[in-house]
Length: 354
Image 1: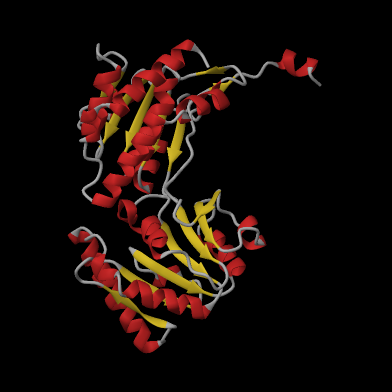
Image 2: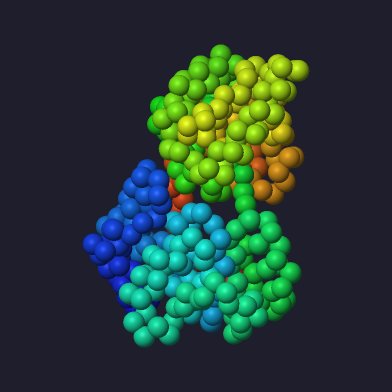
């Protein structure tokens, strides 16, 4: 690890350890706020940044972008922080346009860049042309419309790194249920609005699925209250599913809490049209077949699959999800510090080692 990277890590960890940083608000939800602060504390107290830099940035020569533009419209402050860390540790200048994370990013940039020359949190009204000026790499995080927009206007000579919406899920294999708090932790953090939140839960036992359904129904009123717009969306979808249940009864009718806005469904077939937008969509049936249906329904969009029970099942190993983890760990992503650099290929070195 170079001295420059070591110095940048030291400066970042000083900010992470600052008492003022501990007072920053990352989420209005207490559980999510606590989770974010625990992540920051772990980064400050552990050697994770140093170890990851040694692992990713020492083995081969690389080039960092001169000027990175980050367009951030996501709801996960930790993903935004990881993107910033990857860009800043390699020495790139950074320009950021963000909707949800402006306050704490400003404090971080002021701490690392006292002269206000390396990092810039831009005005939300700045034009796209001005944002792109002098940029050689663009990183986008947001919904499909934002991704398509920047894909259209970004010149071909500028590298475009996209963090598009992804689908994650949970698989419960066998007759043993995970602790309820693990399911709630994975599902309810970040109000289920980030890529690593499970959109559905697969269970290979109908009896276990019904048991989980009944236990979660009792908890719906106690869950963190969702925003009013989300609660109205949930209420409308719940009414639609209730009418469907009358005409073609599934395993269980959808349940919905008017107080919290969270809901739950249980079905025997894989049908995303019968999912509630927020909550617990349980599917009882053959896990391997349902994972295949998910891959067909969302080609190239599957991200995290958490599991409980046997982790060596072929269904999990051969699924199209790009990350596997234990239940309760869906939001504990590993660091990636080399995402913005370009590794240099030395043909002469390759010839001498073959």
